[in-house]
Structures are given as C-alpha cells and as structure tokens.
Amino acid sequence: MKSHKTKIQIRFSDCDMLGHINNAKFATYMEMARVQYVDDAIEPSREWTETGILLASITIDFAIPIYLTDDLTIETTIISIGNKSLKMEYVFVCSTEKGDVVKAKGSTVLVFYHYIEKTTIQVPQLWRDKINLFQGSDL
Image (cartoon, rainbow, N blue to C red; front, side, top):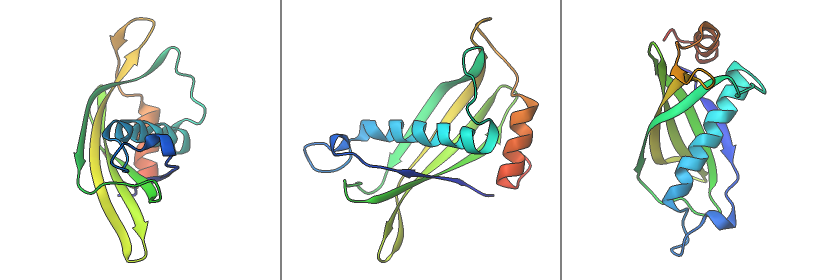
C-alpha cells in the first residue's frame, strides 16, 4: 500500500523548553499531512463549506524526541474506510545519515459530515475511488 509523504518544516516556535518538538505540535503536523493528502490524492483545493470531514479521534504514540534540526517527513496512509468514516495512519520519519528513523506514530478517525444539515453522511464514492487508486489498494 502506497503512503503519501508530507515534508514538515519544523519551526523554532514548535520547540519546548527541553529543546524538542512539543507534543501538542504533533496533532498540527498530522493535520498538515492530512490536508496535503486530500489536496494531492483526492480533491485539490476542495471547498469545505457544505460537506467535509470532522476529527472524531486522534492517537499519538511517541517513541523518540524530534528536534528543530531534524529532517521530518510524515507518511500518511488511509488504513480503513467505513460507511461514514475513515481511519488514517501517520508515521513520523526523520532522515539521518544512518537511514530513516521512526520517531512517532499516530492515527485519526475522520467522520464525513454535512455542515448545513448538521448530520453525518456516507463516504463519497469519489473519495473511495481516488484513495484506492492513489494507494494501489482496495479498501
């Protein structure tokens, strides 16, 4: 299954007093990767005012600290698609002279939502088709 890769520019303000990336920034990085995935693989410049996705759940497992000078990429994969939701997995990878190092992993559950009607909706067939095409899998 092919993953989507988003290069993250770590900013000085992302660091905490201990010199590593504050844990709250990981959710922001996941959001950046999620938006880039949608733009690149599904619907570029999507209009989000009528229908879209809501974050229903987020988990992050921290393994090794990430620092300001790290070369960070987030590898994003949709691992399952339900009736009205999908689950995304995020792998925080830093490139080093010795190879790639996984520094953290996370996941989100996203629910499709109609903002005007204020109700959940089915995962659009367009999304299913484009995800399967992009990832080279049948979810």
